[in-house]
Image (cartoon, rainbow, N blue to C red; front, side):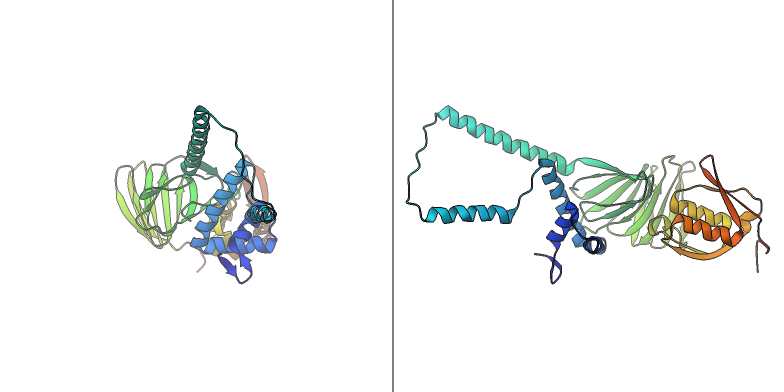
Length: 339
């Protein structure tokens, strides 16, 4: 048995989590371990896969209960006199029919198992950010609006997925198995690292930001470039060019972390970050207001609180129009470029 602590069994905790009977403390404990321990992440992915297969069949196997029934039957027969069972005679053809039926059943079970193991599925983050643990233990965080296609189980020396939109990957290291992302025709290859990929549907630009390790970007026209920790790579499809720059933007993963840091930041950039974090579009309608500057830090704050603080700081008003949030106000009393 694998245990998190002296009194907590991992398999039992995972079963309670999947059945919906875990307490909030148990849910928090399991999610913390799965997120921070790659081996636990792989184990949980395997348990969840088996759980779903059993759920689809409509029954669960209880080892303790089954053994109890067998043990009771053994106990009852100990005190009974031995007897020789009598079986009716069966024709040779009948035996062959039964054997054939068993073989067909086994073949059917194998086909279903094989098909479900390697069948591809697509996960779409329709309304909010979603997390998915892949079969190899890789953690994927999808930004709202993004989608990923992946197999139920990887095989061979490649682990290949397809991405549309933006996602953050924490790739599990697997010896002699390269993790490959197809991002709108651009390939990203990696052995084990963490990075963000933005591959919008319009296919104009594909961006990579590497948080740890390094990755290789391979373009449709076979350009290959290595992107290291702290670097950002952009492939411009129309020009067929790649640009790599150093990047220390604290808000580049704000959509994932829900943390925003502003240091004397102009309001046009502030609202660009807020929009990217919460999946909204802002437009400043008052000329000059975009040059006002904000210094503030928000950590997993509700959108309403963020907008209230900004509006009270600069006396702003908001109005929804044509799918955007229009921002208006009086402006600022200091120059747009303070010394």
